[in-house]
Length: 139
Image (tube, rainbow, N blue to C red; front, top):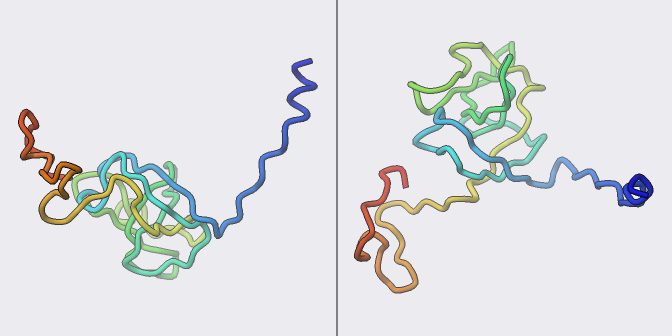
């Protein structure tokens, strides 16, 4: 009976490459631009340009978010924003075109505001509320 019920479930639809998807940032190699836990909106198969962030497959490693620096004969040169953490083209060389899998469109969450923290519903900033500690420097 169980196998019969599973056979009737609809087949998952394949999402077209042009439809943006969310990815989760893990690690500290892109700080201060991106932080561990940030959620990004990415588009697979998008055109890569120098200066943009991209999801790349580094040799022998998982997918990573890196900044695209330039293109050479071997592929795309990608770099991390945090020189003390992670791996980039300085260690592994250029990333082949086929291993640049997605372009970062935006950070979805958490929203970071430049300058002072945005006021909450009460009109007071969170750090002004009694009993609330100072905010993170990264936030």
